[in-house]
Image (tube, rainbow, N blue to C red; front, side, top):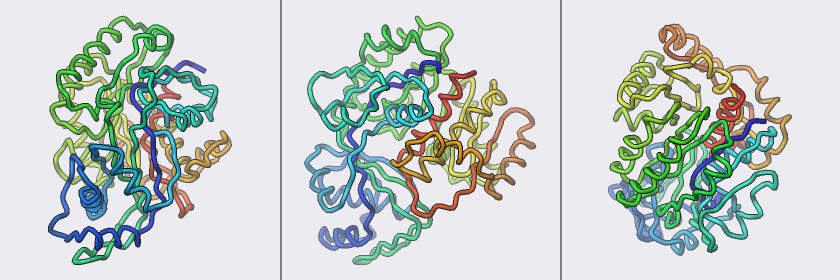
Length: 395
C-alpha cells in the first residue's frame, strides 16, 4: 500500500459515557440558568465548561472549546465513567487505515504512556516533543432525545453528535519536526494537514506555517489534503489558508464548518441550497477541489471531482463503520460489510438531484442506511479522512 503522511497534532481523549442525569445535577450544583447559555471560546472553570457544553447541546450541534488547564478537565471528568483514547485527526485516521492495511506516518506532539500503548505497532511516528505531556480532551457523545431539564433550562436533543472540550497547551505551540519531512513525508504519496486550529499566537503560527510551506515546496508527486477544524482564532484560520492554500490540492471540511463559513443555516437535504453554498466557498477559497462531508452525503466540487468518487465512498464507508462499531471496529470485514449497505432513501434522492443540477462540476455520494441504535459519534470526521486519503493514495 502507498505511504500516507498524517500531520500534525494529537491529544489524550477522555471519551465520557453519556449520562443526562449527571448533567442535570451539575446544572443545579452550579446554579446555571437558560439566559446564561453562550458559546465559550475559553473555559476558566467547571461552571464555564458546563455552560459551553449546554450551549452546544441546546443548538443540537457539534463543537469545540478550549480550557486553560487540565485540572478543570480531570475534575469534571471524575463525575462520569470514561475510556482513554488517542485523539486528533491524524492518529484516528491512521488507526482506521491500519485496519485496511494502509501504511501511514504520524507526526505527533503529545506523548505519554497511555498514547504509546494505543498506537498500533505497524504505525510509524515521530513526536516533536521529548517530555511526557497530555493535552486532555473531554469527548461528550450525546444521543438523540437526550433530556436536559434543571432550573429553568429545558430542552431535548434532536440528533446525536459530539462535543470536544479540551486543553491544548502543547498543540498551541505545535513544534514541527524536520526529521518527519526528511524521513517520511518525502516518501509519501499523500500529505494530510490538520491540527493548527488550537494555535492562537499569530506570530508563532506564521513561523510554523512558513516552515511547513518551505518543506512542501521541496516535495514532488504528492497530493496535499487539508482537513479543516474548529479554530480558536479566526485570524489564525485565515492565516493558515493564506499561507498554505497555494499548495493545497483538496480542502475538506464537515457540515458544521460549511454552515459557519456561509454564516447561515443550510438544509443539508436541499440540493440547490447545498450547491449554492459550496460554489460560494469554492470561489472564496480558490482551491483546486473542495470536499464536504456530512451525515447524509459526501461531495467533491471542482477539479478531478469524478476521479475522487472512490475516495468519497471510502470516506463514507470508514466513517459509517466507525459510527456502527465505535472502538470495536477492528476488522476489515466490518468495513466491507458497511460498504455493501444500501443507500439511505432520502440520501439517495439528494445525491441523484445534486449530481444532476451540478452538471459535472461536482460528484456526490450518498450515505448508507444503518440499523444500529447504540452508535458512536466521536471520530467520524477523522475516520472519513482515513477512508478518503487511503483511496486517494491508490489513484
